[in-house]
Image 1 (cartoon, rainbow, N blue to C red):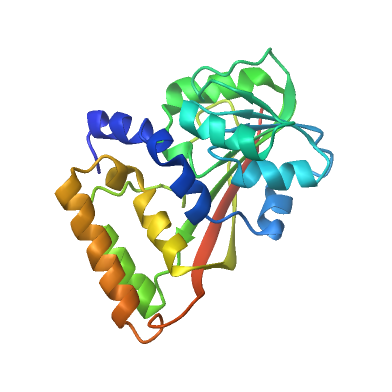
Image 2 (image 1 turned 180 degrees about the vertical axis):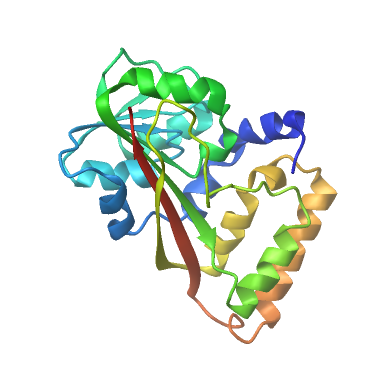
Length: 247
């Protein structure tokens, strides 16, 4: 596990690779989004929205969506792609909304960055009584050989434990309910390189270490029989979801 300082540096790094993040990162299975959303959701906060992978899916469902994201680079990319969505500067520990402003808060690929002791009460504050909190993570499914090899290369860094099996949300919420969804993200070899380059620890590495990892991933693309010569690659994921409600 990375130190607190390393976590803070990594958490603040994404804006430097917002374009790569947008090109390489997958969206979320529609079944997973439906599972974390209550049937009566109307006003939804996408917290730690990044470049808007989840935001787009919420807007497509006709929901009233506000996005909160601490990185200026990520907010700029999100606003460029979704100009009609309200995008605010903020974080889980300091949400720029009034009490009871939303009925649902969703956090995709970001809960492992938060200070739960501060974020839990803050999210409870902006939720209406009985409001819902949903967490999502896309985790590479390493049961496939080439994905396992990619994982071994990427774990040379300080890739953080996302703690998606049993996330702690603090004492303001009911017990967590969990579900997993399988999916494939089809991307080009170039987009796969963007996926690797958009990892927080890779962004913060020095030039030589970063170049070495990217070279090794390129060699994997050129040599593995499941990847060699392909214009498109199906990268399998498990989307791990948790949901709870404000007590």
